[in-house]
Length: 89
Picture 1: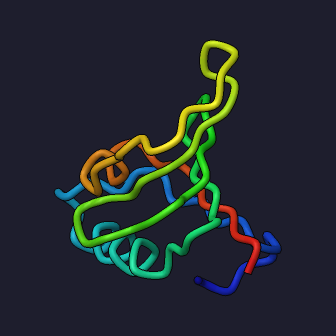
Picture 2 (picture 1 turned 45 degrees about the vertical axis):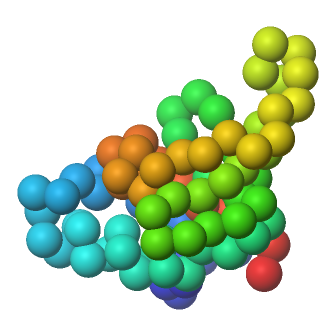
């Protein structure tokens, strides 16, 4: 993860495939993503259960008053919608 003063939270919004520098930064952050990390978008947070080259599997809480295990989020969806990653490592 990049060195910041955020103590474990890295802002990563605005990484679309049309911007080479931003895309490269997203790829580096995606490569560093680990099980247990929290991914946030503008209104929701999920916890990473597993990751592969194509996306992540997550658990999410308080969606319709329930916890949902095993939601699959594709990497390209993360590229467009992910705003922050918080880590416990």
